[in-house]
Amino acid sequence: MIETYLLEHLAAFKNCRTLSEAAEQLHLTQPTLTRSMAKLEEQFGVSLFVREKKRLKLNANGEAAAKFAEEILDMHNNMLQQVRALDRLANTVGIGSVAPGPIMELIPIITGAFQHFTVSSQIASESELLLGIKNRSFQMIILNHPLEAPEFYSMKCGSEKLFASLVPSHPLADREAVSFADMDGENFLMASEVGMWDKIVRTNMPHSRFFLQEGVDTLYEVTNSSTLPGFSTDLSLRILGSGGSRIHIPFSDPDSYSEYFCICLASEKDRYKRWYDILERRR
Image (cartoon, rainbow, N blue to C red; front, side, top):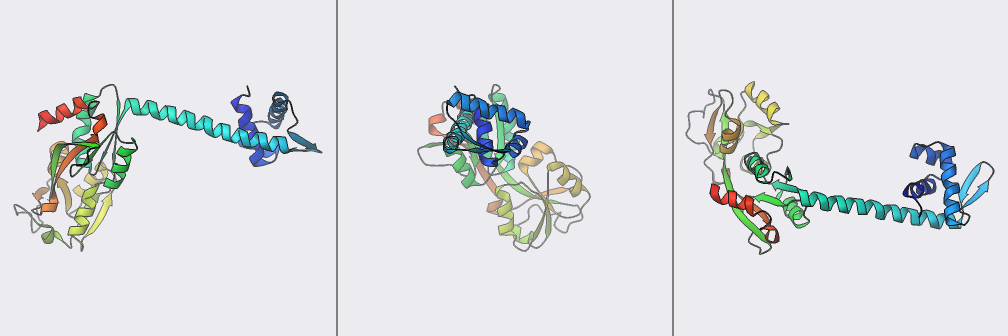
């Protein structure tokens, strides 16, 4: 049986065309690569090269062998990836969400429910989440509506209300509630990854500008030294606290409120029964 490293050496020689370039690509010495070529000829039992003065070239046998080598290496790599993916699928719970709030609230609970699994999370668009759960790159997704199709199982897992975060001197800071129309045209500080809320605030406040900040710590630091309005939610306030002297006033518009639904494939419902039992008790 030809060892994998010899196939890698042959494929590299085919692509580089010279021993010196192939050796450099493989981080080998040229004599080491020359010995590999000789060993390949010995194992095939036929000539693979045309030997010219100071130059080695593949003959017809060598070209065919190199092509097979590339195909075998592709199959080898695909085998490794597929088996590792199966292992990750068996031992990982991937959660995707349309907004960060449910992730902040639910990931610690999910991690506790699946102590022997690796729990990962990602914020993505609805279309990306639907594709992900179908191809099993996500095991559960969180949307702002249930999925009625029979191949999915949905359960409500929470809700979230959007607030305006204002300094006490802001003209609207004494309001019990504000509307998007009230705030339209003002400049806002906003986290760079807010999922669906990004489209909601941009659509409802088309005359406003939004200055994005990377990471919660950076956002808090900039917010504490600025008078620009920002955003918070009842979820973020409950989990992260209000921070500083900001006044948090709820938006009154219907778009400022969202319910969330935790969704898995119906065929996987029993696997995540422990998690859905926890959600049921939280309702």
